[in-house]
Length: 439
Ligand code: SF4
Ligand code: SF4
Image (cartoon, rainbow, N blue to C red; front, side, top):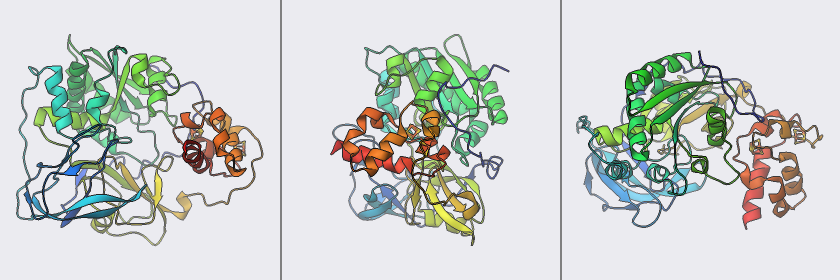
């Protein structure tokens, strides 16, 4: 096997907790009676609805668009009727504008037929990616067509597919790599054609040997004189899947602070986003379904589920048999970078990768104390920042002085808080500093 690569600075090894769902095949959840579709599911201006209340929609119809600036359209995940416009619960913004679609339970699910895309040029392929509403579904929802249009000043030579999935518990990408390996490789070829380059690496942490084997076989079958696609096994170390760390692990290139991967000639896409790009181009299917992991000891049944965007967490909980008496905390996203939520009314968006129902023995509730200046957080930080200083300045009411410690280079991976023996909520301090330092 090829040697295991990793990034040079910091990182931690939290318990993986992936066994709960790693072997569970992706299961299609039945469509709920109604869906709440949040209008802002990407970075950029939220969508404006393109249809009125009471309008009938078919599965896959466009229901919202962004006329100006950054953004992608939204599509109906089901056939049905637009019931209302209002506000929905949101994990980070408390509430967000949304539309509710009443599902037509009699309608047959839409089917898609594969088309030949190899004759399409870069511009036509990009238009399909944009038109299908594709965003980075493993991250913050950055529109994929923009990521695939790097400035000409930064020539790209390498595509990296991110299959690291380094967050504990989450196995959605793992299952996609096992169950859709050929589609992901074909998605990689679409991206390579858009970027007019040949080389692609698929980075996968070494704790997923079955995914490495499946993707290696698919990559070998898919590589041609035009496309060179290679799987690169990676050392198991969090945050291996963070964009800058992944680039450095695989290419040795260091993305400068505040710069984009294109600054070092690289474009990175998550493997599940790549599967969505395949759907958008080869099947002409918009993005309106999401594969997500539901895990933790606080839910009766764990699963990797394919759900319609707009499905509420409460519907997922009902489908999986309810919560257990041990439930202590609900987290959207992974335990390292996710957000604790208190409502089950939150609907799934294009970027929801997991919901964790954690029992008391899966979380740490030790109260935090004063910094003992051990320096462990500095050692753990993959960006070489000074989290302890940021926290101390925030506590002292001086968040505006934290720029010198790199607060805006922090991508909130949580390594510092994970190792802190005083259990200091360093990421919360950092989020506060970012808010205050920009005001
Ligand atoms: S959360 Fe920020 S400061 Fe803490 S380890 Fe990660 S990048 Fe460094
Ligand atoms: S790890 Fe915690 S206690 Fe140690 S220096 Fe950092 S903030 Fe202070």
